Image 1: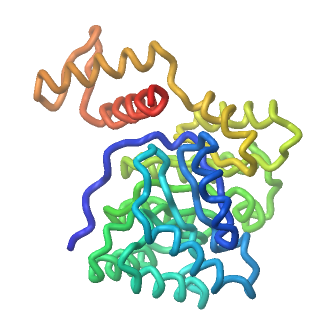
Image 2: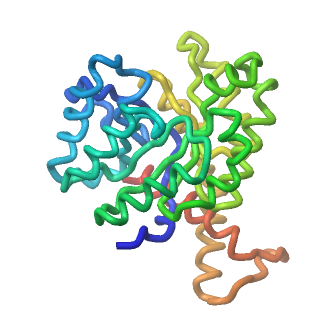
Amino acid sequence: MNASAAQSPRPRRSFIFCPGLQPAMFPKALASGTDIVCVELEDGIAPKDKDQARQSALTLFEQPQADDGVERIVRINCLREAFGLADVQAVLATDTPPPALMLPKVRTPEEVVWLDDLLTERGHDTRLHVIIETNRGLQAAFDIAHCSSRIDAMFFGGVDMAAELRCENAWEPLLYARSRVVHAAASAGVDVIDVPYLDLEDPQGMAVEAQKAKALGFSGKGSVHPKQIAALNEVFTPSEAEIARARHVTKTFEEADTGLVVIDGKLIEKPVLRDMYRILAIADRISA
């Protein structure tokens, strides 16, 4: 079965990790108000606990998931490491795979294509989310973004990227790297999510950084604690005026059935539609 084409736009304003070792936290994370819950098998799990975390994480998906608007992802280990290979083997072995996998430390398109091929051969519809957090990954970000139709979003891994670049983990030193990832994701028409803000005692600083990320083109930003989620959702939620314009633009396009239309004296082409539908997806999530 071939990987399906890009999925319908959906809100990705915020995400939070849930430790694979603590499946009891999964329902709480789903109820936190976030748009994405990512079950963690990588950095947050000690080597001695990897096997147990993997088993616990995959068990979560043996039962049908509620249609609650929250996106479920499992962050596996790096595909170039033994733990990552074990994660992939476990996903391929189950008949109830996670809806999506997050791939850390991706360096080349070939890694993603390899996994895409294996999932296709197995018949899994699992989507992919790619983290760009290495120098090689940054250099290849454009090609990575275009290498698989399974990719729904790219994530900027600022902590590891700062270490690789030997720069301060701050907005200005990482602006070039962030911009490269935004450019790559936008070129492929996929969402792009910014790194979590680590200082829980600085909510104003987080809000400012989230506003900068939104202005740069990010779709959302990660959190390290549930108390950050509401503020992130607020930053990345479109205004009533933006929602009204999105409804107007999409309705006009659908009725015109052409590649471009003129709205309020401005030429609007089809690439604008993805952003308009993403805005409406967020509006639907709010109303739900």
